[in-house]
Image: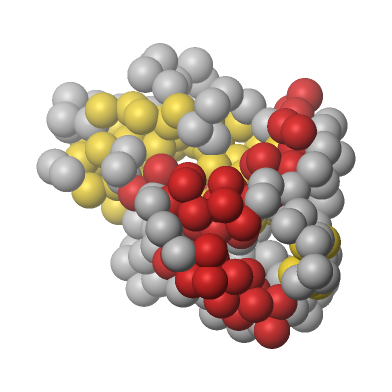
Length: 215
């Protein structure tokens, strides 16, 4: 696994990736400083050096924009989707501290803005048809479930859970390892906040290297 990034290192790297996608060239050290309110170009340079030492960048210190981002798909046809190991709340989905990794996806199938992946762990969601290691693509929605086979994400008393409608009720599955699925009545107070639009299932383990930051 790549070396762990600090919060500011992650934000700088994500900004550089987004900037490169939009402009086809990297932001300057001064532009990075202005973006994050860092007045000292030396401090920005130190952050870039830390990213280089952790294997995310190659640097040419003699050039203002002499930085190359390593190991990331920067094609304009792809988009970087955050992946969580626990279902995020609406607030958590836009924060980076609970993101396990980022996965690239073709823009045509990435879903609506705010979509994210959930990485299933253990067998807690097996009754919903989800296996250990599956990646679920969740798209925000306020619509009702259209059929009994559809998996949705619901809010129940402030907690988030996966949900599948059954005859006479709902089957709820927690995203936390060790918490079993349970059945609730049809009149139970649930608010649908997302729906699973795709499931990706590997037939073998993940590769040794994945990117924890946007790419």
